[in-house]
Amino acid sequence: MTEMLSKKIVSLLLAIAIVSASLAATATMAAQFYTASSTGWPWGNAPEPFPWLNWLASLPHKTGVSLTIITRHEATVINEATKAFLSSPVAKKLGIKNLIAIYAGPELWKTYIEEAYKAKRPIDIAWGGGPTLFNYIDQWGYIQPLDNKTYPEFDAVLYEMSKMPKEIAGAPTYKVGKDGLVHWIGAAISSFGITINKDKLKQWNVPAPIYWINMTSPIYAKYLPDVQMLGIADPTKSTSNTRMYEIILQAYGWNKGWQVLTLMAANSKVYDSSSAVRDGVIRGEIAAGITIDFYGYTAMHQNPACEYIIPPGQSIVNADPIAILKGTRYPVAAAAFTAWVLSQYGGQQVWLLPDINRLPINPLTFQTPEGKKRPDLYEAWRKATSSKVINFNETLADDTERAMQFYFKATLVNAHDALQSVWAAIAKAYLNHKINKEQFEKLVGILTAPFPFKDPTTGKTVTFTTKYAIYINPKLSSGSIYQALMNEWEKGARMRYQFAYQALQDVLSGKPIPTPPWQTGTQTTTTTTPPQTTTTPPATSPTTTTVSQSPTTTTSPVQTTTTTTPPQTTTTTTTSGGISAGEIAAIVVAIIIIAAIVAYYAKRK
Image 1 (cartoon, rainbow, N blue to C red):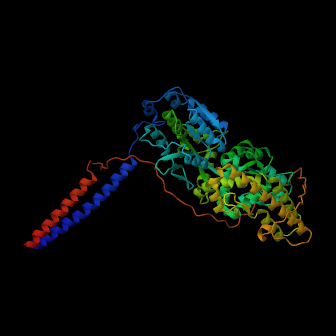
Image 2 (cartoon, helix red, strand yellow):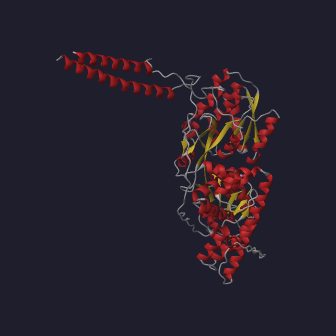
Image 3 (tube, helix red, strand yellow):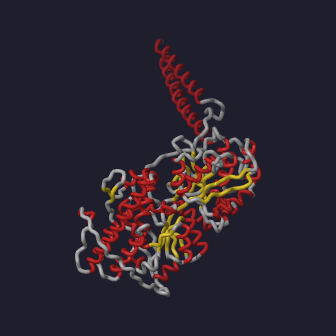
């Protein structure tokens, strides 16, 4: 009887021990969750807007200061932001008297930042220009990581960042470096697509391009070279166009992607800036151009005939960053401005202005009175954030970007005259039924095929593959290597275009299409000059428009994904009742010991 009772007691005590252990584990997880989700901010429960403002003002800081910002934003954005910020309680409370903007192309940022630092007037903030540009200046060591232990004022920035989702349409909204600290934060979001002018499409009786590959159609070449219906920008002068070319190379794969880029350039007028492409569409100078989203929204606002199209399943959504730069003399003021830019009550409202039309990254912006007045922009935001996007490999884009830009520049911009005249001749021969589809496709293959060139670093003959682009990318900072390759690439491209034109002449005269000399190992020289044929477009427009067809199957590279989280402060874990997880564990151990003792004595009896 005693033995049975003892066994029951032991079983009961063991059950209690198991349950207690389970409760201890649950309590520990709950305590950890509580710690992670409620570390609290140094300003406590201060209300919006700008709950961090009085706390920032209590930190040592200089007043009467001017912040210097290097930017890729247009003057309209900076002017409106300056006006709104300087009239805000943030600027007034902290004594910030002015914002000074440096408008510089991406190729000049390194020079400006270094020269300002040497002159002991360092630039305080970088704002706008896309993640690739910010990743560059981060690699160069110019961005100040948001270390809130060293700079407690950075808590204001991290607080505003906490309102954002970690990703939007698969793209990170901030960058965490190898040090575990946040380096840059998105201040707006951007998608990339095609802005069309429906009036011009109707006048020229051509379809609206929906996918990138639609812009390679020979139908857009029917009035070349006199009338260029499409528009793109030089990648060395446009970060947004650079990003779109990278998207195309990843959406279609490297080889097919370069064919798409080559024919797109052949059909297009090449502008010196992305804003010029937008303006060309608005004015009706061209019927369609590749643009970043807010240029498309601006075009729609200024000309109702315009429409912005995101190629379905062939674009990405980016965070457009802001970052504090190393060496700033005014870290409190810089943190305050950055936090203000991210706040739904501050700089996020600048994007809502009709002359700007950008998409806020902080979704709470659309819950403010001003945000509720822009249902059209909210709908654009909703579409962009829910868009089907490609698996974009940011690492691959970074590792090949300079090589891609300069190869594009040499072969498709510097040699654009030869490319467009040869393409016009091939396209018109096909449109006028002088060559068949098979002959047309073979000629296009010659026009766009990779060609051999001499690598100045090894002396070997190579082609522009992904592997070579990754290899040569970091070496292009050398002036001699850069110039040697620019010469090789332009010369090779012109040779390719000339051979394609000669092949067309052979076909038109009844001869077979010859094999390119770079495929046979021999080199030939020809002096035939492509004719500058002209066709006059109609003065009046027909009434019918057509819809472009869907693209063929596309491929995407494997994406490297890295999960990143912002830094968190550490605190001692306790339960809400004041009993630590360690104390609970001790109780469990004690119960187990008691059970063992009872079992021992029961056995002796």
